[in-house]
Length: 124
Image (cartoon, rainbow, N blue to C red; front, side, top):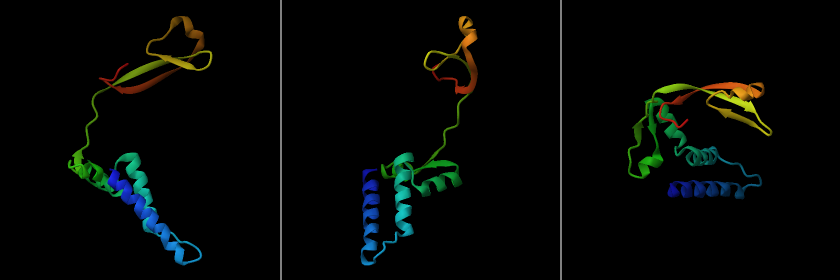
């Protein structure tokens, strides 16, 4: 990971030197792509090419993972069973507080009911 970031930084710094010979520097598309690739690696641990390969294959592919000696592509984990959970939200002094059960004594302050799907093993 560190080597990839250093390579991206070095490439972007070299790209900045192309404008020294002319009065107006013109960045090349390759430098822009390298910068976008660097941002993608930092945020998702994948290059832009990895995202394309992942989309085409339907697997989770990563050059960063492969550089650590692991497999380039892995099966995308299947989502587990989900359960519907209701949250009952009530206005309080400075914010809104939500509970998994309705509070009968605060019925007048009911702000709304939020329904969401959560994994079965998730803490409630």
